[in-house]
Structure formats: structure tokens, C-alpha cells
Image 1 (cartoon, rainbow, N blue to C red):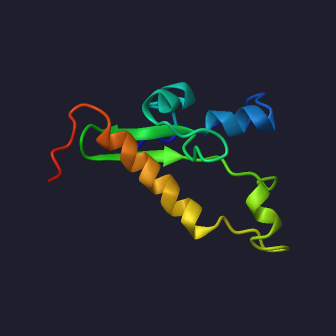
Image 2 (image 1 turned 30 degrees about the horizontal axis):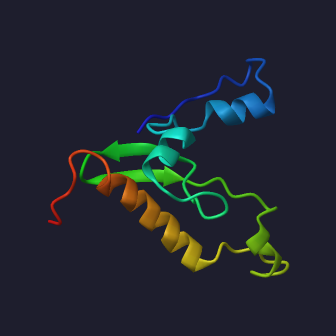
Image 3 (image 1 turned 60 degrees about the vertical axis):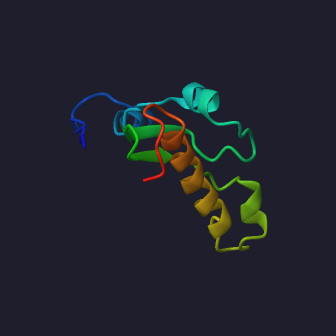
Length: 106
């Protein structure tokens, strides 16, 4: 992977420093939406930051404290429900499976 260091003497704002540290996308959201049929609120991949065709991928879902599921899961201790975490992993797997080379099931 790549690590980007931010010079503390630079004039980057906190937001710009945060963005500078974000992993670069291999697939941005628009490409993800071309591959997967899912849409809000069940599209659980915002971008893909690592991709090995036919083998593996690493996806990112940006989760904020305002997500609806946090209202009941759990009050005062927000945890992303496990079923949504598994669905997000399945969607990343779908991105791998639906890109060339199409996997042969092995």
C-alpha cells in the first residue's frame, strides 16, 4: 500500500489533511454503480481502493453517526449491524466476480 505523509508545517486545513490521507480509489462510486445493481440505502461500497482481477478487492464504505440504523443498533453505543457488514463484503466480492476475468468458480 501507499502511505502519504502530511507536512505539519504546511498550510493544509484539517479537512484537506484528512482528504490527503484517504486511499486513492481504483473504482470511484460511479464505476461501482455501473458494476453493482444496488442503490441507496443498500449500496454499501463507496469506492474500491485495491483490486486484483479475479482474486480480491478492498472496498470502503464511509459510515457516519447519522446512519439510520444507529438509531436502534444500539442507542448510546452505535454499532453497524453485522448483517450489513456481511452484505458490504458480499458486494465487494460481487465487484471481483463481475470484472474480467470472470471467475470460473475455483
